[in-house]
Length: 484
Image (tube, rainbow, N blue to C red; front, side):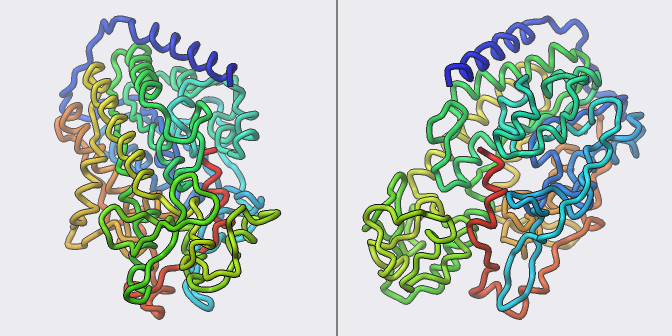
């Protein structure tokens, strides 16, 4: 931990120095055309084109930055081939070494399962320069400048994507260094989501970058975002930079799907026992999932809500507990008895929701301030998706919503956008960049032309009324590992 803190402070000093360099060549912010020679995208799994718990070509080609690059070239940009670290279908491996990509199937009921196939090959490895898409699934804001050996990082964090994307130290030992190698005149930057999402997806149990449970501390996040955007501006004083902020993590289907399904199925007058933050044993805390401040159940809870009311220890067996935690008695009805409550890791309670919301609000204030200070365009994804969550969005006569699967905006992991969702995000970037840089020259993506998600396996089970596709917690492990 002491070594980490020293590395962090050293990195911050580098960024502070870089951020102090004077911008001698202010960019023409209204060129009237897509006058771009090199476009580089910086981000995490959202930027990488990650979908349904995996990175695979048939999703990557519809990632929002690939769609932006296509629209730029159609508008006259001379960026050439937008190079991507392709992972061929069926895609990247999960914790078991097989393809992690999720599929929706109809077996004894609707289920979400990994494909279980051998992973695809990594291609485009022989490219003799860095990739234009530098989105790294699982990356936190600190990873933008971290020069730690990325092969070792892939191993220590059970995350193959650092080595997959950065690939060779010949191009630089950090994302910033590899971006410098490309000398872009257009940069999109969308990092910081994982600094709070890792905490939330774990049910409020995971540690942050400094070793405490919770999101990245706001003071550190603020230093990092100021330094990161300042370093980009100093390194590329003529570049157009678009920075996106962080959506409300609680509005994605990963958190909003299971609780309402349980609420609709439990008998009147009954309530569910669950563990609040930090509780490992029995608990008298209860919910109907309908009261103000009700806890959220995460999507991995889908594999256990069928056990409600049953004398079950399935959660503890699936997670290979050597012995039950003190105070737990699995001979009692699961979820309906204080000695066998729903485990904390499956629950985002009211206090954990508040922690996540505070971090998102404070992080976004820091992002807005540094974007303004450096003349960058701000893409307000937070406000946009809050509106979509509340009201949906209609495009070409089709209404899209934030509902799991049937809303068509999110992939099967409930966090990452579908191909249509990626197109909608691309259009938010394009709208902002058109207003600030291109004077409307770049046409929006035709969302109707992008592939959707088949809901056929759900139809026979009356999904909208009471069913949700099932998937057990261990099968989510490679997804949750992204933020370790």
